[in-house]
Each structure stands twice: as C-alpha cells, then as structure tokens.
Length: 489
Image (cartoon, rainbow, N blue to C red):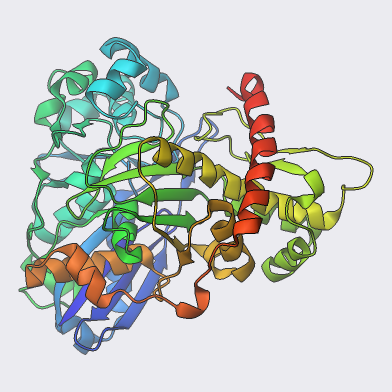
C-alpha cells in the first residue's frame, strides 16, 4: 500500500510517498514558498501558494506511483490563520506562527478574560503572539468587512484538507495551538472565543476527535494531481504533532528535540501537562494523547550567525567547537538573536559572557553557542520533570541532528539516550504513517512501532561524568540568563 504525507512548512511544501509493504520511501518532492515580511513584525503567505506548491510536488512524482496512493495526510505549520468565506474564498493573507504584529491583541484578549493566569487555568494556554487567537482579533479590528464575511477559521493544514476534500474540519492537535480550545475537554472554549467576538464560536470548525478519515479527494482535485478518485484523506495535524509520529514520540516517556532554525522539545503524555510557569505549551497530540511542548526561537540560528562571521562552513564550525573543552572554559552564550519565547524574553538579544584574559578564544565561542542552545532545552526538561514526566529516550531531528558532536552533547547535557530516525522528513513521514494507521484502522503507536526505523550508528549514550560537568555549566548559564530578565522583558 502506498500512502502520502504532505508537509506544509514555512519555507516549503514537501510530499513523501511511503510503501508500507516494502517499508521504504518511494518518492519525494518539494517546492519552496515565499514569505511576506513587514517592519511591524508581520509574516504572511498567500493560501493559494500552498495549493500551487502541492500541485507542483505531485507533478514531480511519477504518474504510476501517484495512481497507487491509497491515502493522504497533511502536516502543516501550526497557528497560521486562514479566514475563509462561505464560498471558499480566502479573505486575507495567511498570518503565520512567526508573525509578531498581534502582540497588542494578545494582551487585550487576556485582560478581557481576566488575566493570563485565568486564561491558563481555564483554557490551558496563555494567548501568545504565535497562536491563532490574536490574529483573528487583529482581522476583526483592522479589516472588519473581511471578518464579517468570514464563515470559517482554518489553519494551513485545514485549508489544504479543504482543498482536497471540500470538508471543513479542524483536528484536535492542531486546534490546541489556536489558544481557543479547552485543552482538558477538547472542545472550543466559548468564553475565550466570545472575548474576541460573540459570533466567533460559530465560525470555528468542528473538531475531529478520533482517527478516522475526514473525506475522499474530490474528483477534480484527483484529476489535477494525478491521483485516483478513491484516495482517503486522514485528519493530519500540526507539524509538531506529525513530527511526534515521525520520530516515535507516541508513548509516555518518549520525547523529541527538533534542532532547526528554531528549536522544539515535546513529548507524548497520557495526561495534559499544564505548566503554571508558562514554559511548556499544553498541546494535544494527533495520535490520541497530549503533546506538551517547549519552543525556542533560537537554535541553529546561533550557529549560522557565528559561522558567517567566522567565515566557516557548518562542518568547520563544529570542528572548531570540538577543539574547546566541555564548558568552554567558562564562556557563557545566551543565543537570543530573535528575542526568545522560553525564557520569556521578547526583547532578548544574544549575549557572550564569562570572558577573562585566557578563555576568549574562537573555539570556546563556537562551543559555547552550541552549549547555550542545548541549555535552553534543559529549561524545558526541568519543566517536564517538575510535572512528574521523566523521558526514557529522546529522538533528534532537524538539521542540527546531522552533527555527531551535537548529538552527543544533547545526550550528555540531558543525561538521556538519544536516537535519530532514518527518515530525515519527520513531519511528512509522520503524516504518511498517520494515513497508514487510518487505512489499516490501527493505533498510530502500533504503526509507528512496525514502520519507524532508527539509525543505530547515530545513537548517543550519555556519559555520566560529562553530564555532571554540564549541569555545573548550566547552573552558571542560568544565572546569566536569570540576570538578563530586567533587560529583555
């Protein structure tokens, strides 16, 4: 059986086709996406770009392969806002997860509801600029006519599902990232919706609660993409939810760290984990559990900035870092080039500290950057442990996971064994596995156990002695981090 995963990311659309009989990927295609940026923090895209890119990807896949696809599942960047009218027209640009132009609206919603603590207690998550809620209020305030015409609030992956099937539905995992869903009950929270608008609850799609098909690909879409007319469309989910499936974080104790431009740390949990300190987002998963998640705005970006200044390739930058001893001889690097979400430093900037007459060296600077990013994940790991969740294994994905040096550093810093899936496309592969689970009417966990393979050569076992040294270095790093609060908040 062939199944396909579509990954609608910020930078590109990717399509992966997986053969469940031979357990191998048989086709892969991608198409880049543009980004609309404005000085006010706006980060937007056109919804039509997604459809055009999906078509381009399928055009690049062999025709015979396409006709054998039985099911499709869509992974999409979380939090994006696609306002759709009754006739299916998109009323405004898609405001993305990285759009920070709606910070004022976040405060307005929280204040009107009774404050951030009340929002977190009753809904499960605060209203953050990345989430969908403030984007909806922004549209209502700035483009009232378009808001009045809006029939449905969709997310990017929902919109692609709508294009494929004509059905309007939002999956539970992705819905949890809007800021409008009651995390514990899995339904829209009428109170927080009414703060934005009394009629908003009626503009929210039904939430898909189970792992069942949402529909069949429309005939005209099947013809456009070169598919047969019986292709089943699974619910899909947010990119983090699909990455959890594609990396094996589907049972209690299983955790994933994504080392991309931004960084995420998330885990499958059988119970909702609501962090009163606000470090973890209380999301739901797309495989029937919950997906508490830490998101940092700075991960490989720190390496990219420094190696550009040092005029080094990725490989040479890591070689430079390898020359330095563990702890970088006391150098401390706060990698907050883009501000930061955790810790909550919206005005954050990168800081190099701890310099003395002997440790200010090129190799120490390189290593301290990688250590500083790794220590950010410890903030999330501390939060998990405070909520009585202790990981048994950590899967690594993203560009940074290609480095053996960084993989071992993560294992030593966290004190947890790390592993890497063989597939480098975690979200697209996770979507394909979800589609397979839907077709076979099996649990996602069972399908993952059968089909997800790890690269044994990339496994990293933590060194207990190194872990103790890193915890000591982390203590110093955290003192610098805490001391920066009055400047960066």
